[in-house]
Image (cartoon, rainbow, N blue to C red):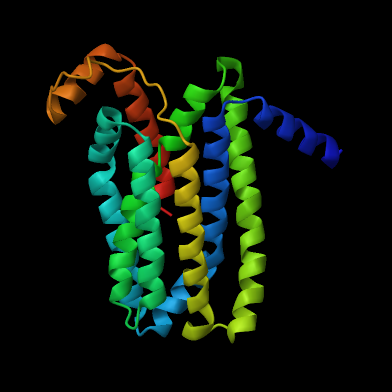
Length: 247
């Protein structure tokens, strides 16, 4: 049963365009690399001298940055293309990992959190756009679910490896956790190389001709004018997300 499921997934991925395969590989690698350190980040931060208030403040800074840049980043990606923003996001993630690895005080982690928050927003919509460009209409939902499934599996494996490595490096101390961030940095470097060499800029529908410059506000005005259901969709998404934000 499991072997049949694996065979079907391999067959599905194999018949898609290269961009989709690169997107799946990138998403799985990102999930794996994030999973290496996610369960130890709070311990690492406290070990570097942060108290509970400072620990919460670092998280709040990351959330605030994500909220502030979400819309401008989406606009920039639409105007100038996905690939270079994708590469920039991986570069920033690598920078955040290196900053954490080299940190000697919890304040360094503020910069690392900012870099990671910006990077997450830069690449947040990339997988969906790549899937839309690289697969047939009838395969798009399956493509996104396969990408999510493989990413989840990679995220499940990472903590097991991380636990072994932390034990090997001395346990749940700052110096025992620090090598994970160096490993994460190297991993992002390899992902950056893969994406740079293999990903092609996806084709996208443009609201205006490439040479037209409407500006930030006018671009959004035109978007809402030409996509009548967009406002209702945003309102529905906001209402759906509100209960989750209360937890």
